[in-house]
Amino acid sequence: MKVKIKRALQALLVLALAASFFALGMWQLQRAQDMKNTTTVVDHQVYPLTEIASPDGAVAPEAIGKVVATSGHYIANFKAPNQKDGEGKIADWEVALLQNETNTAILVVRGLWSDRFSSPDIVMATNVSITGTLLPHQNDDRAENTSQQLSRLDSSLLTGITDMQLYDGFILEKSESTRDAVVKRPRISAPILTSGVPGFYWQHISYVVIWWLMALLILWLPFYGRRGNRIPL
Image (cartoon, rainbow, N blue to C red; front, side):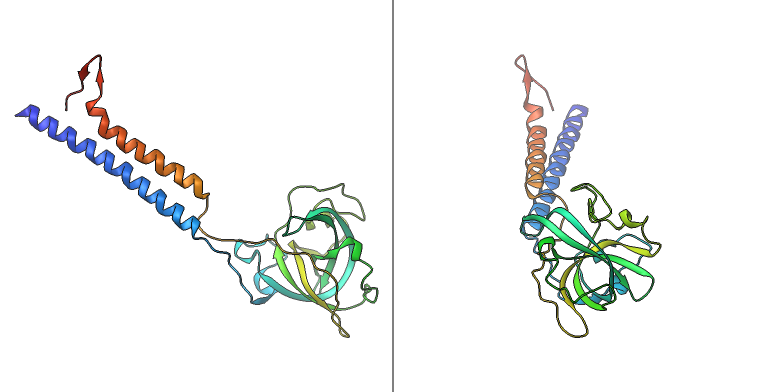
């Protein structure tokens, strides 16, 4: 009687473990499906810069990729070499430091460096209104950092040349206008941002295979025999 009870308990344990591994596989399969169904998030609303960002902290994750609007005047101009746009094209960009209406400033990508003379009417005293995509600062250098050139798009590189509060990140301009006219020039394409379940689709699929193999192994283990002897339940 005791032997039968022991075998029954062992059988229940094997089935419970196998069911747990199977359930874990189903969970990973669902995550893989969620990843496959992830779609690009497009928010067409234009937010005031001060509404979703501040100069005393990093760009919040939920603010990344939002279209923002601000105004002010450019107080410095830099070359940012070897930058990659949303289409994968590498080129040198024109980056300006825009002083807002308060004593704050933010980096603005105006366009290609080769097109920097396309709007000669804009000088340091010209007030401009801009809209663009808010992006976080870059961490990797693309070139040497000099007084006229930025090694990466990162306002921390400018702390030594200004005492203004600097916003983290930068704005990739979509439009620019003065009191008199809209500034027409080629703009840089923004990267495509997506949201959804973190991870990679095929990584989740591999976990499905692993968990289900574990379930089969647990079910097969009681029947495994060594040297012709079976392990009894």
